[in-house]
Image (cartoon, rainbow over the protein chains, first blue to last red):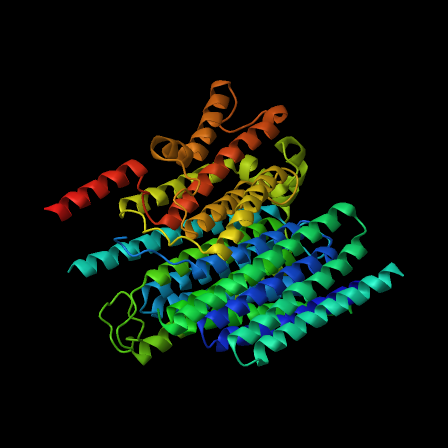
Length: 86
Length: 95
Length: 94
Length: 333
């Protein structure tokens, strides 16, 4: 089982690297933000695997927080600030 | 000597250097703020690597506590810097 | 038996992650990439979670894993939608 | 196989982290740099988890991957767009490289030299026999600290002075931000999809903050992580264009802002009056006192970070009404 888990962690890092290429290439800010969402989900997956592999149950909390805060940054990307006098 | 520890510590050094270079060379103030944050992250990585004791062993909690407070101070310093940028910009517009 | 099933689920999850990220990289435009992304989010993470939950065999851990999956599902569906709409708004230049 | 697999995992993770750090600083497009920096923060949280530092990973997930990204993105959105690609009407936001090639190389070499020196010193330190006096002292005294999470024990008992001063630093930074001007204008009201997200995300974030505060005594978590999560809930409300984002107004706001420092000081001084050292908790009371201080600290940290996101003193409704009245009078003239 540990072998399978470290292999899966490697698979997720590869998914992450592919996502990184999209972050670097863009072309638009929207593409980059989508890739960030993918990196976030890959990060959540890696933390879950690490939590079993390293026997650290607290990493599940980290994964949950990471998932929730990914949504916060997405809203930060879309929020439209009012101009000064309305 | 642990390979993992050395790997992360050396990466921390590299990130510090990258951040320092960016903070000194960038003309845009916002990017300098990002660079200083990167530099801080490198220092955090160094400290966490030093605290690591190997798989299955409890790490040293003191550097963890240091980094924890460091992260919170860094974000408040960033916010203060951004407020300064906004004010500077408002002053320039008035000119 | 349970071990084999959980291994299959975990590997299938990783497969969908990879498929999703390849899609994100190869597909031509933002909107089709969005669909690729949902594969990784929904299927990849879902299968991975199911595999790990079977492996853990602990009720509290299973519940937490389920909660994480639901959070990711809801968050990623909405935020992908918001990002795409924002991108369209910027393209049309308003 | 297992250790080998993890080693490759470490290598690829660190490669991605360094690559993102480099890419976020190599570009002159500020918006792009900030988005890359957010991805960098996300991966750092994974790295801290890998190095068995879940307390730090929680803080990084809330702040590095969340709040500082939101702060910087908001600053980028506020940034005026240059009229044409070459137009640098504003020296503050000018991103063109005005530094000469020679300076560039000298700075690069100096940075590399610094990294080399740092690495050399570290390798030197690693090769000598480690002296684990401090961790051992903590492990031996953990039972008397009132909590069983060693990081919380260091933060709120063994080195409580540092944490008190840190809360004072946070308060100072907010006062600094207040002195620089009013809060940024609010956000447009959210559309139906965004609103649907807000309706479940905000309560879940608040619950998560409560959970992190409670669990911090015996597992990773605590006031800092809980405060940052609570602040994130306020940030979402703000971004959704809500008028009320959970911050109290006027005098109540002052109390919440200073609650961390004042409860900390009050506990310390009371102990001093009772003939104990400053912040030297009696072991029987330590658990309860730490929870009391942490609750106050969480509220202060959340208020501080949220005010930092507002970027200035929030206009209370009374002040806003007065300002509107004044504006109407001016327009009538």
